[in-house]
Length: 376
Image (cartoon, rainbow, N blue to C red):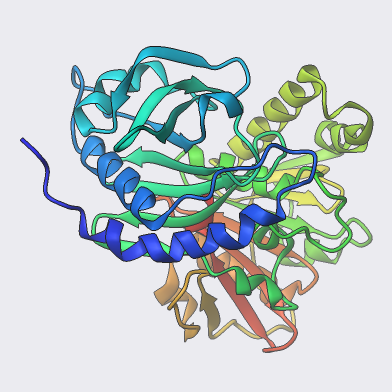
């Protein structure tokens, strides 16, 4: 049977095409030029991937990444003797071979239609990529030309479509991790430098237990006035493995050993956030404690509302009471940032929602940035 058309594919295709039309000409001169996908090609890839995501192969949910490039553009690709049709059934059958991270099914133009020509690990900068993250959940993204770096363009979940709004990065109060997730280098960050907080955010979200991470200034200890003492799991002296790795990044970031050490360190600290309470690091990425209980700072008022935004087109900024926005973690994080205005708080929910709290000097309020659409 031929599946019916997926309406969201046609609805989002022109927006995605416009996004890549702006990006592709800006690719680095020394990089191989990525293909500019047409609206019709975007629609066809989304449609096939969506219906494939709803199928099962031997009981398993397919996880597939599709990249639009020719075999000639890939490096050491696996090329099928007979290309596969871009159809849900064909994608599901080959899904087990490409479910590990970093492997893409290559899609290219045949005589009359798109076909799957094989598999590749390397793709050009700004190459169109569609990832099947879960049944009915698709993410359109592109590569940034750095190891492990992708930027989300749009997220489709059933009939819900979220197109990322890059204009969010123009807000002077936009947190560094949000800028990085939008593909914009944060002020003071060297091009290509690892954004540790983005890596920690992704790892926190991945363990599905929920958690809170407080990032406090290394220059002072006033943050302790907002933490119940004694801190049961205080770390003294601070754990500096992650900080040391970042210091070595410029010299060693290209090495596989350094990348593996960074991944393990990120995973270890993100794992601590699953413990009840908040994990605390400073802005040098030194671990100060975990399982910390947040309290209102003496002399400060109770936070009454937070400004909530999401970096997707069509979303509106709204003020809500912290208790209506989330649970205890969100309320505590909002109070902490309200009292410690030179700190930020990252909060993961068990359902996958992710929020970055930062004090907005322009609004004079706590600003809650919803960023799960950028982290999927």
